[in-house]
Image (cartoon, rainbow, N blue to C red; front, side):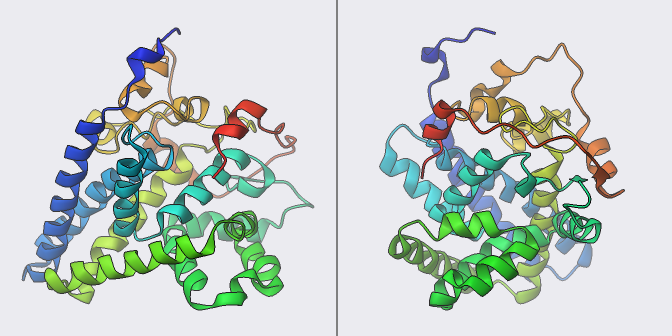
Length: 317
């Protein structure tokens, strides 16, 4: 499939308009969930928030790859705000996400398979169900809090080689330990201030915040491994272009075209469909997601080959 680079320009104006619209809708839904007296309205607001927050995350994902806006300052500014909505730090997210691109389908990121005796079946099941039940989302705000508040503990051997290893986060923690600490701490402080401002200005209740972000955690985690499940153990090609409802595909800004993204990480979301072969069968998102709940499968397939040098250069923080 041949596509000219001139046809792959970043739609900066569209992305800014989408971002402001999503921010406003997400803020309104937080307010509604906090002030509605009817439980059904609260549930509807939280469900809607879970989708709009995924639009914000998809735009954050564009900023992480430098695809949100052609001007770096604008790209990063919206990345910082998008990360504050998550809530996380932009540099934290960028570091972890680039690490994901480098380690995709390796032993460090294999939740759907286990390979005894190297892997503990219990630990593999534990990590998969943490992901499916939304706890994986919590690792970002919790990781930021640990990074900001515990100082040397984040860099300690106990945290890196015992706690982080148990949860499967050891490579991520190693990556985060190498980034400029002062910048990430400033971003985390901004995120805390941003969330505090949302809560105060919108009079967001604890219940309203928790149900909205709990619904978002479940929705976000549902996709975060479904788009890799049961694919080849290949760093670049170990993903799927999932079949999903067209409206949901647009709300997630083509995030379900995940194989196309891993193969072409510099291509903006609006052009990803040009790299999807729609004439071939694509896995169903819902069927793959439900299958994951049956637990990890045994595999003896060897780990993938290292990432090629060209993509490795693109994924340096």
